[in-house]
Amino acid sequence: MKSLHIARFIVIILCSLLFGCFTTGGKKNIMKFHKKINKVTKDDFKIYNSKGSITNFNDMVNAIKETEVVFIGEQHDDLAAHFVQLEVLKAMFNYYDKTGNNDNVVLSMEMFEKDVQIIIDEYLGDIIKERHFMQCARTWPNYHFSYRPLIEFARENHIKVIAANAPRRYVNRVASYGKESLKDLSPEAKSWIAPIPYKKASFEYKKKFEKFQKQVESHKVTGHPKIKNSKMPKRNMPLLDHLLEAQSLWDASMAFSIAQELKANPNSHVINLNGNFHSELKMGIPEHLLYYRPETSIIVITIIPSKNFPEYDTNYEGYGDYIIFTRKQT
Image 1 (cartoon, rainbow, N blue to C red):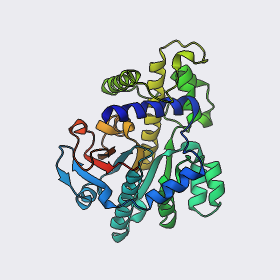
Image 2: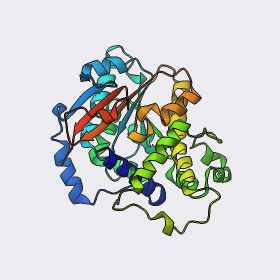
Image 3: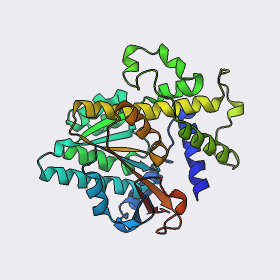
């Protein structure tokens, strides 16, 4: 099972960096997923602590409610993960609503790029219609059945939403030419990414990234870009290094967005939604956030769809402070 997750991650990373975000397969698939997500319940996930002991949703919420930043790592097509994310957001909002501090809850999302923050703010403020929001905010193809419930809950309850990610066009530029190419950006464009130069990936993160790449290369994966046939210009560095730099731009930019929020509003409690690889093992975004803001309190939740649900998979021990296995949707 783990090798499948590894392969899927690399495919998504390479395809998204080189060709853009994945697609859902049209209206028929959207209708199919709508039916599925309406059937997801609390029986479709099991929560474990980092050492593999089973726990429950309320205990997890009690542990995270005073934490400054909670990372919820997902696989983007896992409907049960999106159900969990919404339940966490509701629980955090309800807790702070009782204390009169519900404006302290902030939703931060990898799924939106920083240059569309004004579009999100306009939609949450009922200034623009949803169709304009979706067009201008460049929502992902799976937005309706994965992230719309979160955005609508935020809109109805006046929860701030942060467009945390670096614009894909700049991540793609790094993947093609290396991070030095970011120096050519305008001052406004640079304001939408982490400050240059951003921190390099840690040695452990680099090892993990390289290991995943080697593992995926040993499998035949449908849809995997054939890098050797790429028409990109020659590079001064191996492609893997550029991909790692691009990955780090994602991580650093999301971390910097969160750090900016905490600097402006020290009482904020941020729930950050991101792909698993960005936060599992407390690597990636958490590392960069602690670089920008060393004292930040952090909890990582890693959500993994499992063929052997609800059994605990020891391969993922330590992947988060909480590891949630979900029933694989078919």
